Image: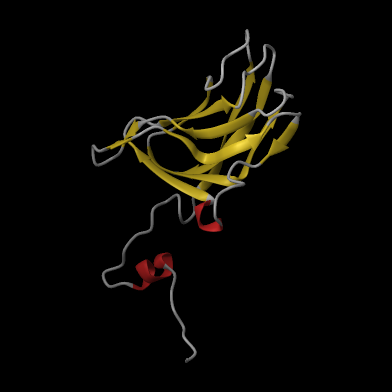
Length: 161
């Protein structure tokens, strides 16, 4: 083996001739927060959903490691998925609904908090979405019902510019 000196994609873009501009959200992007508060009105069956926040159109980097969700006790064997509703990409193709895109099977049987993305690999801690009209982040409950009065609070952190 030999010593190597290589460039990230973003550094290679800057060194290219002609120079390739990095998206604003990747370089100098501003962190933004989309906050949510929710109280369940009436019990909901398994697979019930809650639309949490709408993210803007264009290119958005969702930073799951900085995002947070808190919940009240849902009851024994309950889990929560956090995902993205279907949306139209910039190129007019449709991205199908992905109920567990941001996290899968968060244990919400007792009250707690978590950063979405706990089950994602480190390379997936930032999800890039490019949409024409924006995209909705939603939660869905599995393993049983969502009880009347159950709460979800938190925020999704993202970059855009």
